[in-house]
Length: 190
Image (cartoon, rainbow, N blue to C red; front, side, top):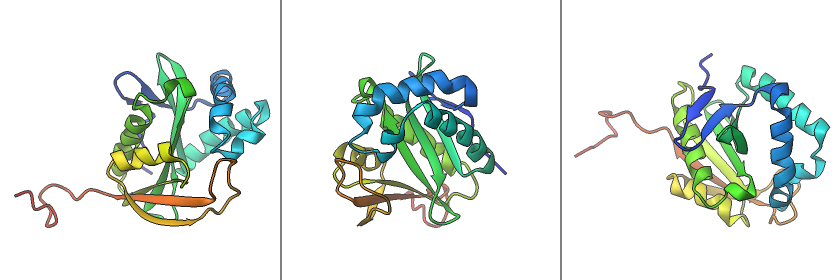
């Protein structure tokens, strides 16, 4: 099975695969310091604690190995400032992207650039035909990322999970199809 790179250089930050137990302290601190920022949008934050962080890191290794989820720390000067991931989508040819940042890292384009790097990495895999980003319709900041990256809104649907406190319960689904190879019949380049 072809896998994405474990380290992706993005100029002033890197995306790096979470390293299990050795990442416990930085991952726990990142989530702890970001909890109030994430709580309105991420229901999982309510269950945050040492045990859930250890479980996340253990599962991250197994899910990477199986190809189910490629979960990256977004790190600046060696310190995690957010997370970006790609998980299996609703069909075998698709994957979903997710991202979040420490509140001190927002407003600098990092989420967009991190997501762009993961988009490039996922389309380098031979079996990925499309990518999706899903967010609550009330989360305008999350909507900016797929819009900037050229994703197209394809539908709105009732969220399959309980809504976060600030959420509407309606998911917006954005999609980006694999680019046509240069010189293909759909590339009219004239």
